[in-house]
Length: 223
Length: 102
Image (cartoon, rainbow over all chains, first blue to last red; front, side, top):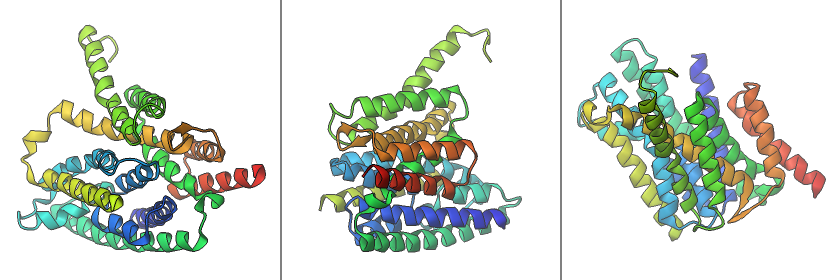
């Protein structure tokens, strides 16, 4: 219960931060709300408005947001085994397959509890996320220059807070480091939005390098 | 108009990947390489996005108040501050540095 409250508060505040960031980046309030209603996966939404604000081509911007959303497919995979939803329900349940609902459902002891947990978290967060997006968007419109209030720092801070718990081992840190170098280094030379996509290649590159090293240390020296 | 195209493409793409997870048989995506890659892809994207949004203005690299805000957020994360505090610290420090430096 306390966890549920914590998740709710965090999601509500990120929704608000998203509304502020999106309108601060130059999107209108209806566009901002459409994103929360239709996309409903926070990191992708932040990425999209960031890329559009930087002057990115709409499809390049959408591609970056899309790649961030790919992780939801893997959540869906876990959930489909756990919840065993009827085929007809799946298209409706899909929109709620996100970090938080997956975490709650996976933490439940029985299938029934997992289904209830998924549905309750999904509905509550969907309503909350969209309401707070609207409030943030209207708020940002009211105060005008979001930069003067430091609100343009909310986007990168949200990304950093999402990233930090993922940096569990050297592999993740290498990927992050390489991605930062690629993302910043290529910024002046490639069209807006493209450097992020190139930086995504840090993931397969590090995996490949690790695989080669693994093959060389086949006798299992370092693990 | 461009913004609406981007919104439409993102909404469609993100919905489809969510649905694929629920629909495909388990074996297809369960290969270790695919799972490792899926776990590392957000790491790469989030790292690049964090850096760009903090240190870039359009296509030019800059070091301004946002960098100070992000550094403060990083300290808050190291101190295991909750999500809300991390974002609030970044916003307040950025606004503060901007107010001081004009």
